[in-house]
Image 1 (cartoon, rainbow, N blue to C red):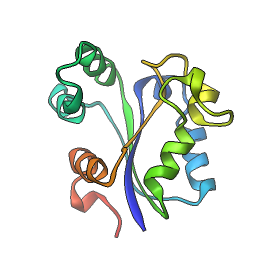
Image 2 (cartoon, helix red, strand yellow; image 1 turned 90 degrees about the horizontal axis):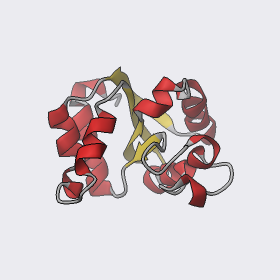
Image 3 (spheres, rainbow, N blue to C red; image 1 turned 180 degrees about the horizontal axis):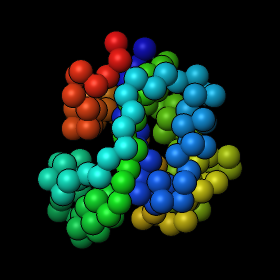
Image 4 (spheres, rainbow, N blue to C red; image 1 turned 135 degrees about the vertical axis):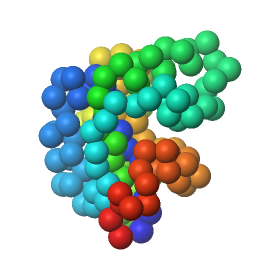
Length: 138
């Protein structure tokens, strides 16, 4: 079993896509072991996007992700990292596979509805940013 971090970003929450995205996760067979709606602090957002700190779009990322509520999700299942990333689709919705979340719902690369960890290391780091150990089911 593998755990990963998933997020429904402010544009997805604002557009009331949370129920559909959660339903897709459950139908795929993943177990939701942590779930909460929250507004991310600037400090947490900066830590979350730390690998992009030197890029010109860093400030826009932080502004966007702190601009409204998000849904933070801890998923568990076989190959959860790659599986969730496949469910999301490519970052640019124009390149996302038909039937993926981003192909179905994202409007732009900047407002692409969801986030998912890209490796076991980032999953561990991101889960630790958004959930305490006591908030995750065993």
